[in-house]
Structure formats: C-alpha cells, structure tokens
Length: 308
Ligand SMILES: Nc1ncnc2c1ncn2[C@@H]1O[C@H](COP(=O)(O)OP(=O)(O)OP(=O)(O)O)[C@@H](O)[C@H]1O
Ligand SMILES: [Mg+2]
Image (cartoon, rainbow, N blue to C red; front, side):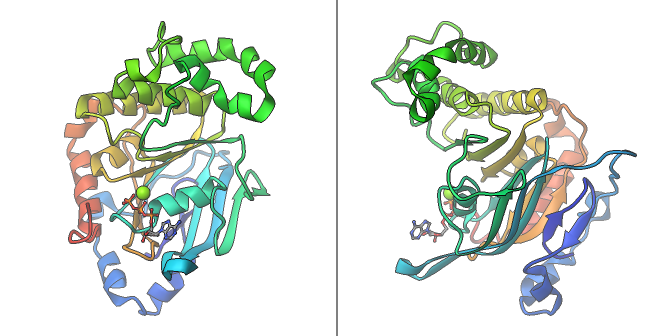
C-alpha cells in the first residue's frame, strides 16, 4: 500500500511518493505500511453503488512546498482526490505541513510544484466556492454577529450585496442555534458561539468545499462534540465536500469517510484509512468496537514521539 490517492469511492491508487516507497527508499514507512489489521483494512471492500459516478471536486497532483527563506520543505509530492460530498481528514504531527496543505488548497499560498484543481479549474488564488475556517473564530470585535457573517459578501460584492444576504444569514444563525444573537458583538459570545458564528460566515457564500483547520480545537469536549455533529449535518444537507485538519483521532474517525495520515515533515500521506461506519454518525458510535479499532489503527501509524 502506498499513498493514497482515492479514485471512485472505495478504490485506491498508488501514486506520487508511493513510487519511492515501493523502491524501498523510505524503508521505515514502507515497513510500517505492511502493518495490517484485517478487520480495519486500509483497502476498503466498499464498492460504489451500480451506476454511481464519483465526481472529483478537488484534485492535487504532486504538490510540494518549500519555504526558501528558512530552507524548510513542508510538503513532498502530495496527491489527493476529494469527491463531491466526501468528508476527509488529515492527521499528523505538529509541524508536518497540514496547514500549509490547506492554505495551498484554499489558494492562499502557491505550491512550489504540482497542481491543484477545483471543479476542473486550477486554484490560483482565493475563490468563493471554497469556504475556510480556522482554529480561532477571528470575528471582528467592532462588528455584530450578523455584520461579521455577511462580511465575505461585502468584501467581494459590496454593501448592497451584503444587505441582500441578511435573510440567508438569519437562516444560518437559526441553523447553528444562534437565533437572536445577530446584533450581539463578539465579546458577548461564548467561545462555542463565536465558532458557530464563524461557521455561518464560512457558509454565507454557499461554498461547495469546506476547508477546516482545527476549527473546534479551542472548545471544551462537550461543545466540540456538538459542533462536530452540526458540521456533519450541514455537510450532509448541502452535499458539501469537506477536508478537515485535526489533531484528534476520534474527531477524524467520527466525521470522516477517509482519514489521511501524514508523515512528519516533509508532509506526505502514508496511509488512507477508509472509515466504513454508517451515516449519519452519532456520538454513540464512539463506543462502537469498530470505532475503537479505527482509532487504534491510526494511532499505530502515527509517530508517537512526534505526535501532539
Ligand atoms: N510562511 C512560512 N514561512 C516559513 N516556514 C513556514 C511558513 N509556514 C509554515 N512554515 C513551516 O512549514 C512547516 C509546516 O508548517 P504547518 O503550519 O503546515 O504545520 P502543521 O502541520 O499545520 O502544524 P500544527 O499541527 O502545529 O498546526 C513548519 O516547519 C513551519 O515552520
Ligand atoms: Mg496547523
């Protein structure tokens, strides 16, 4: 098994850096990949339903990134295909290149080499069909919740266009349980409420793809579980494609169709773990024996010394 481009749901191709793995250049990783727990095999038995044509939304090919000033190679030949409606996560050690990958996918940072395509067009800068959410809510303190939510529209299309989406903003506030908080300033919101407002801001432009960089890591466990279930509900309702960076193995497993394990820097995918739990996922599944086996498998693949 080499890394880990995903084709039609359930099938896998070996690409990019996998060629070197096969040649034994990076022996420890290759050896590690021979680990198999048959009950949670990496190569899924899931077959796409007859007639199902998986539509690739995001396609990354051979994406590498070096930061010349500090002579750091953050990413090495990452291949990734995300299909419409798929929820994927990446998990790996601190500093392995996860946020760099997300910024490249969002068009905020150019790759040093390789290509990034979204819906058949190269990603060359920020796009409105991509919504992004960061670890901190980053709401502007001088704007109300509603004004923060419509800000992306205001920046892109002006004040009149922002006014025109107030109804949509109110509907989103309802969706995340913040009805009545539209005129409130961020200092009057709890951490979880601020993150929910940030989620509305991400959704206001109705993006097809959600890129999430540890969006709920600052929250307590109860709020985080709740937000994760909300995120799943919104993704299912909108058939959105999501890619989540996380440090939490249970979070990755409960949310994802596939979890990509990234090697320590330079970041490369060393394994793709297909999560064959039914949807919608529920918090009860956290105690499912199969859930436990997935988390064990992923933990086994991470370099424990480097993982935070
Ligand atoms: N703008 C930059 N200039 C120089 N080096 C950078 C820059 N951005 C990231 N790096 C370096 O690239 C590497 C990967 O950073 P990145 O932020 O992608 O890691 P990460 O996997 O998201 O880590 P964490 O889990 O701690 O958030 C790090 O060594 C970091 O110092
Ligand atoms: Mg990061």
